[in-house]
Image (cartoon, rainbow, N blue to C red; front, side):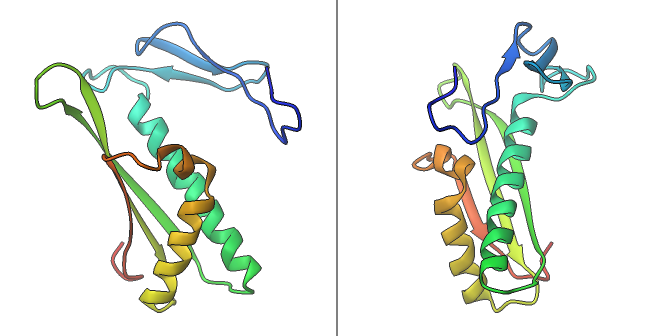
Length: 142
């Protein structure tokens, strides 16, 4: 059930784990999912997390650029590694988001990206995680 005052409400459903289909309820979007440890076709949770973070963070950066009257292009690349816990029991994601703003001095871009990180709904969900890093990189790196 959506919260009162919600600007957008979506319900995603998975009944198959990582071997089958996940879908958006009341929508046409269906995604084949597979385990990251298999060669079966489909996507997996770390890819979906990476897509969510890269899309949301970059949209937030672009919104901040537009609000400042800037036309610079931005890009966010997210790398997600599926890792085994040091104890050997369980897994975790190690996430590195590399963000850049083309044609902008590094310090200015870094400040803008840090502000975007605080405003992006997906990065807000990940705040405090010891396995998530958002890093500004020079505009000619990626």
